[in-house]
Image (cartoon, rainbow, N blue to C red):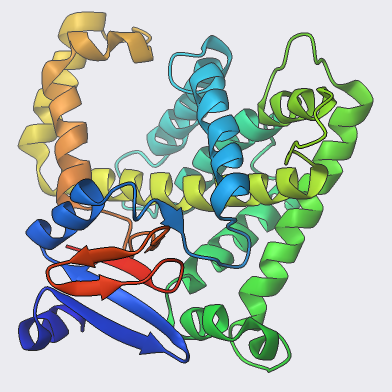
Length: 327
């Protein structure tokens, strides 16, 4: 729909969602000009159910980026959890003995378990009912994002939260996830290791312990951060892996080359780490090409103008317009 509107109105036009104006930048050149040329001016985040803006958002993003560097790619403990899940997936795939099967459930469970390791410091058995309910509610919340009811909710949340409709289900799912992570936070507060943080919750609680009267770190923001990390991380990674599996099934020649490169470098039973990616140039290229060919973020994150901007002859007022990049 946005592509058709761009053909009619040009690569920069305004939509109205209720009383909320949205400036749509359509096409590579317009998006690059807006997000690169006016990157600082459009660095705000649009207000939503749990996403903050301004100083609070920047501080939450800062702690998120720092924790990703500490516990993300290259971290030996997280890498161990990833290898455990990868081995479990291999065993599940092997048990099918070449027969057709649906890999979606084991994939989403494995991805979510790695997210649990990063956020909570531990994993769950795939058969754990509470874990399965967590995954179910993550998927429910993600799949409503960007749909019509979600957009209307963002425009008039004070009204929509009282009206029946499909938007109520993801709201309840978000409440379940928040309740789940709050219980985990309480457990961490009892057994936390602030001298040696083991996961995101530990690291966040350590920031809360610092004596800073102006700190925006508190348990409510921590719960919201965990909710966002689960929603942002689980579905996108799972979708990328599903596309990778589907593409490799449809291109057995590429699958064979990837398999051969891994065996040539590490042998039939060798263990691969994140640091080994440079030893596997073809496999690394296939992974990146999969992510390029099947971009899984169906809607980009809208920005908000933090300053008055004049772009392409149009005036975009401060804090009034949401800027929606669409390529």
